[in-house]
Length: 231
Image (cartoon, rainbow, N blue to C red):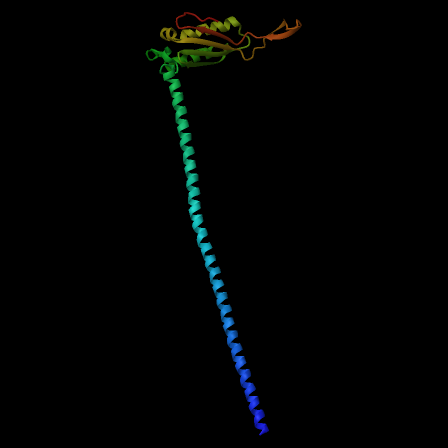
């Protein structure tokens, strides 16, 4: 009888331990599930936040970059328009100054009737060629500005002042009376190799000093209504 009682007690203890273990395992499983659900929820929230951030950034860039580009393009276009208008105004001002402001042309009414005066290239070349043929002339040229004829030539070192003037006076024989009656004539004579003459002069303090006096260049002018050159 005693042996049976002990065996029953052992069985009762075993049952109690099994029940406790089962309850503990169930509670542990429930806590593990809760922790896993909590971790899963946090992970999903993080992923959602990251997705939202990544999706927002490109949208902002796509919106901001076109705005910047449009602003820059508009700024460049505005500057181009301003520069273009400024150039137009400047050009218009120059045209008005040279035309309307001066009677319709650079020389105004001073060139009235010039189209009736024949002064061909052949006649111009003849005057220059005749000057160059002179043995005392080293170079010659002709230029026309408005209604003024500029005759320019250089003479040799040994040519005197009077001889140079005579060469200038004779050059007018190569021009027609119509040309001489319409154009004003300016004659410029140079002597590039002129040595000059030494002279003594007093300076501002009354001291004597040596200077080199040169007679050239000289200039003569003939008005269209005059018959000769005034030197």
